[in-house]
Image 1 (tube, chains in turn purple, cyan):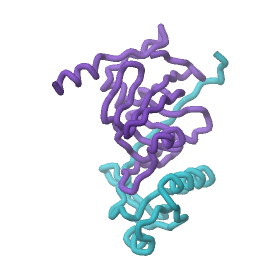
Image 2 (cartoon, helix red, strand yellow):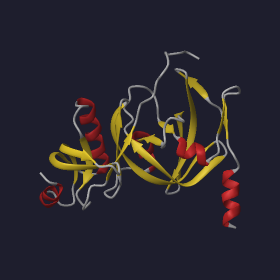
Image 3 (cartoon, one colour):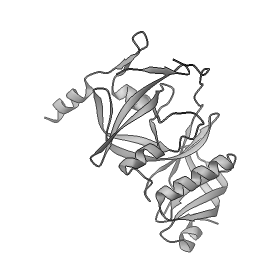
Image 4 (cartoon, chains in turn blue, brown):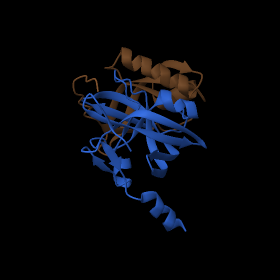
Length: 137
Length: 91
């Protein structure tokens, strides 16, 4: 999967599926400094990911500001050929004042065995999905 | 108000609340000890939109979007050091 540098930060496009509906989300930052993955509420509302009464809330606090987000298990999160099923993401306003639709964190990158190749400006993955499928069979 | 009092006063309702007193325990749970109800909202999306507006207007205050069907607020805390963005570039 191709990486694009914007303001010297690496961005890619992800696909997310929820209750059978799929959308592509561009402008997602690849961030090995983030433990978790977060997606913008305005984008995922189009596939009916909206706050529900029993959602667990996360209060994210620190130097970068603060934000309250909710948590949702999606059908899968996919980057390029690599798809992780039943993946938990955080959903937040992401009102940071610049164009960003999500942050792909270490929860995805580590499980997907990502190799961030900045020489060729692409991100590659281990064959995780095939192995998972193999384990189920 | 306490959360239990808010639940009685606003049954089955989406709200934006403000934490007036709160503390974090070592298991990284955020406990809201004293709360004020800021807004009642028709659904979860509206509550989140109101939260976002209020949070941008008053970034120093501690707002949450919550539904009163929840017996205990389960708020977990994460630290974030932010994104360090480079200069604007045209590529």
